Image 1 (cartoon, rainbow, N blue to C red):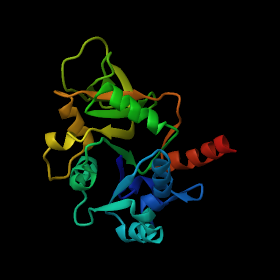
Image 2 (tube, one colour; image 1 turned 90 degrees about the vertical axis):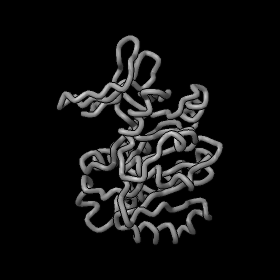
Image 3 (cartoon, helix red, strand yellow; image 1 turned 60 degrees about the vertical axis):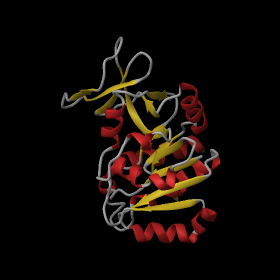
Length: 243
């Protein structure tokens, strides 16, 4: 099984830690974020990892070169000429990710105790096009799922903006996106876009016709390490959990 780590962002919300180094190489309790995610994915049984690069890309490449690209199991999707956003980044890496098996997508700035193998098993059992790991947590942007845990829409609870993609039964439940996903390879046959595009826009459109499921992991910890205050808080709390 293959995976992709979204690592091309500029890390502006993590300043001053990203003044001189790219976000993927910021050290969390002494270990670069990129290294944490790579090791976690390999331990979970992932065979090959694609990483997209853009901001301060040369530093990321130098880091991977020193690691011998993890014995050739890490491949680069180069976005130095044009940042493609989250969805566009996945689509640009199509040829590197495509196979007969589902692939996993993981943000480089997410730290969670989510069981990746349980996520994979749930995806295969539910026969979804995409499975999104979600969790009840405070956030302004929420994904909305119906009583069958199928994606129905999105809302911003501060602005009141709401996007409902299809008809649904019963009440909707809201969750924060954990930014860890499983995609079936058919995804690439359904989306044809060579422009920068948000992954959220893509899966909200796909939810009109296809099954996109929630994998709820409320009992796991989850941190957004792309925000400075959250990063500092997580270093203290996770160190305490591991001590």
